[in-house]
Image 1 (cartoon, rainbow, N blue to C red):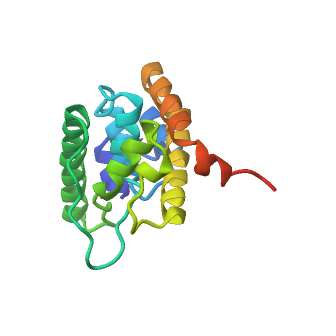
Image 2: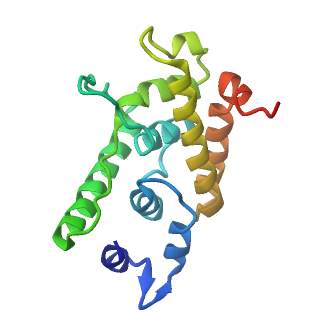
Length: 183
């Protein structure tokens, strides 16, 4: 990944650039994709609910052989941003393939509809399907909140930082917040 990071401006020689410092604040399987999407402003036009929705694809990963196709993005802005993120992922993946380095996982939009409904304030019973495990939902949302908190710390623009904070507040409620309480 070092060569790819150098090509994208995260390092110069053996030194991290400001962009590289931002990358070190993201602990996610898709850290390079997330950092580059932020640096390029690919998420800037999104409201907080759409932001959480699109970023959920970098956290969620479907399990099992018979996963249904993902639903379309819930808004046109989310669809445009997700399309740009996928294009960026394809570019990063091509650079990684070319250099024979570890591959960045493809974003999985399989949970975006649930995340959108939850972040928009829907009650849990209107978010989950009868086949959904509430524990898996809570785990996925907590992982997304963790990623958003990391982004809040490194966000290069105040508007993005504000949208991230609002997204965190929208997600960290109800059963998700309850599951985080110390007993």
